[in-house]
Length: 218
Image 1 (cartoon, one colour):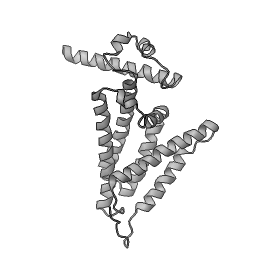
Image 2: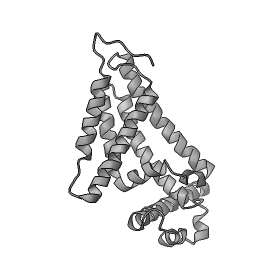
Image 3: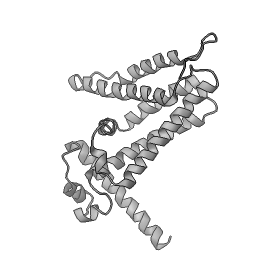
Image 4: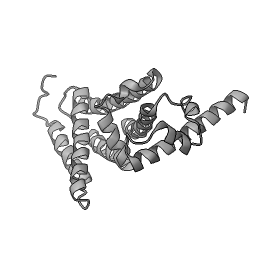
């Protein structure tokens, strides 16, 4: 291994350590409570050294979001590339992929959903923002390809794939936020999976194209 490769590897290890420490502090103290100094101390760095890896706290959090989005993207791409699943089965698999992403890191998933509607993204560097946009673009493309396959095979009523993806994603994130709010009042309540399955089942029924049914105008 050459000098440059070793330095790149060491930098990536250090970045991973910073993210690990930051995530732990975000969870224990709340998203806005940890300071750069606390994160740096946990990662055994000076604040000045930490800034050579991340522009600010918002960028650290954005990078955690990107990692979770990549986890989701990997699952969605597997569904997209499957030659064994029918369009309806792929729609069902999408529901599982989104739920699995939530279950992989519930707190980060919730924070990610909330941060996408905030001003935090204006404080991150162009490189990190471009990376987030690229991952989101790939997610939209893979999801749309799944819907388009259903349209092409005349399994689904044809509609705009991006709009359909937005509708389903809004339902998924809305249900996550709603069910989590109910758990705050009563921790014993945990109906997210069954409610999400029902929502996607209803959407699937509406998308299924019958032999006598014409596609509406886009």
